[in-house]
Length: 247
Length: 147
Figure 1 (cartoon, rainbow over the protein chains, first blue to last red):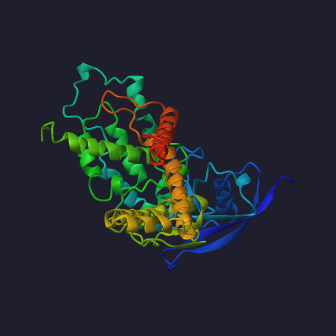
Figure 2: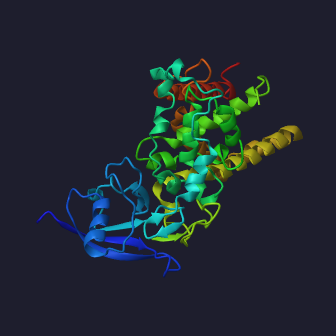
Figure 3: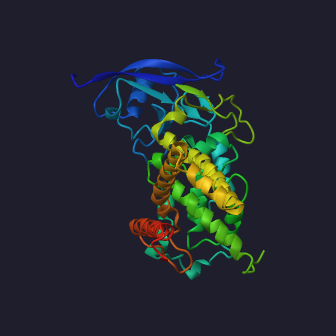
């Protein structure tokens, strides 16, 4: 086929049984014009080198599995068209994460940060079934909907300059998720989460570089969530002096 | 290519069963255009520190008497001082524009019963307030009002 173009992929490789540090390996791939970076990685895996390891699933920017650094920029590889790149494309695992194998990162630290913000509805009293469903107006939904669109792809953690310098920082996606629940009209856990947000390594460690929002593939805008959470945490702290809360 | 990042970044509190390689970052992480703009923004803090020192010098000259004040005013016409003040103005404009671009989205959807105006309106209000305060200062410091 005449429209096939050969590109060189420089891919990070790491075998925990053999390598001390990651290295790179180059592959010549005949790419079709409509290919995404993930198509090329799958071609390498299927046709050239079956030992290459990478995560992927839905192929339509929904599952958040295929986040990698493409030419140094965190990207969802299923959404990143090769048309935007030259003859050589570098693919590496996401920055700031331990590497399990090749392009596969260790997500355990990320999941721990998620748990810290209590990402579930906290209600003082569970509603009885006969009382009906929890109802929300479109306006109440709009207050948090944007922040609920996160697909946990972790690109924001790879882009954030604070994550790379301060390992205790909760990071963009976790704080955005905590803020999402704080803004949910059904939730009563704001004092608990705001106490977390006022602690070490949370919202006030963010220097508003805005990198997380720049790379977010779903326009969640975690930087907005973090900075809204800063204000809410301060208001909550000030309110606690004048409004008595039940323990 | 890549270089080692902070070895503890995003590491789980307890290591998993598989040996992992330490995190990496691209070699040119700090020199990419967006990151360079951010670093420039951070570096303006040094300019503000210097402006603070100059303000202290102004206060000292004010307390020391007319001769000290006149000497200070004369020194401000030195090309180095003029260049410094131009740099301070550039830094203030740069930070102002960045702040006004990012500030509206940091507003919560609602604070109690109050709802902030749409982002473009909020941004326009910020620029209008900035312009009004600057004009007011120019009028007062320029001696136009009160005459």
